[in-house]
Image 1 (cartoon, one colour):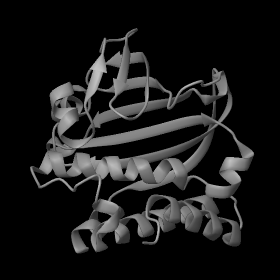
Image 2 (cartoon, rainbow, N blue to C red; image 1 turned 135 degrees about the vertical axis):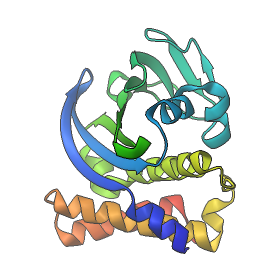
Image 3 (cartoon, rainbow, N blue to C red; image 1 turned 180 degrees about the horizontal axis):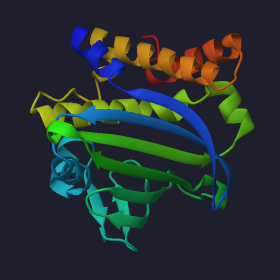
Image 4 (cartoon, helix red, strand yellow; image 1 turned 90 degrees about the vertical axis):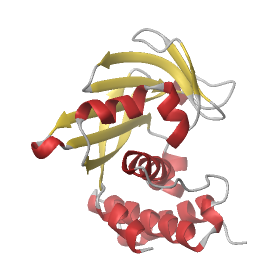
Length: 212
């Protein structure tokens, strides 16, 4: 679990608000520094062959103005693609969706000293008071923490966790519980009460890593 704690500590998490076409939105933002070049991180996040190795397979017309579909996951339109620094897409999960179900994901990459890269990922979704009131930011944030863990392993050439079993392993469960707690801390830092933040973090952890 030591390596995973290092990965958890390497991510900065915060909440915010930003209007999107579907309405007034809440945002979760994750940022992490990678010891890899900006071009390498960009390729890892946009090349279909590499995406399939650390996330899931992707299909579609993968260009600005085109559309994409992640296997068994979300799909949407590619709103902006400015290699190697900016990717913005709509994010739609499920069928029979309404306009308010369309959220936006923005990926920004910036070069840092010594060939490193700062990755910042923002997911903006229309505010749903009932859903957010139950799960808080972790409902979105934990999923992206898991994705960044996969990207981290991929860039380092390390073995990838089994996505179907990771949450059942002691390491995986520990990772999910801890990042849920960290999103609870970010929730409290944004103005939620400590009690509300803890309750939402517990609901999120139970969703991603339910008790056997």
